[in-house]
Image 1: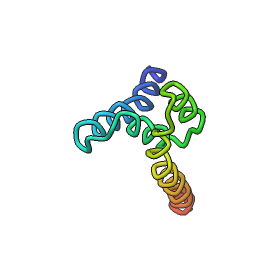
Image 2: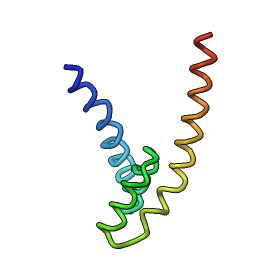
Image 3: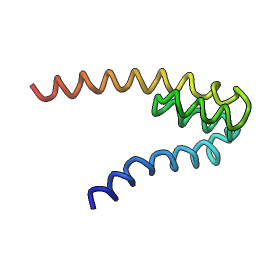
Image 4: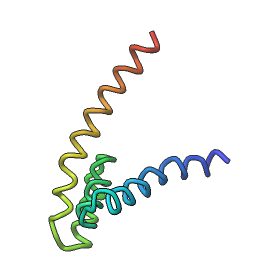
Amino acid sequence: MLFVMGITSTSAPMFLAMWIGDKLFKFHPAINLGCCAGSRTTTDSLDAITSALESSIPAMGYTVTCAAGSTVLIIMGVAMVLLSI
């Protein structure tokens, strides 16, 4: 059960982000994939996306979400340490 919950908690936000980017924000699919790669701050996935599409367009979505994801990660890490004291 723990394995299934791990898969669900990891995959559900990405599927939700793809759906919101497509339906609500009307992003181009390549930019939407770049945003999802940036939200997880994984450069390897950006490389895979750009080589599969043979385009650098997904990098446009990657930059902002990678910076935001890294900043939120640092802030939440500090907040969790401060709340545990």
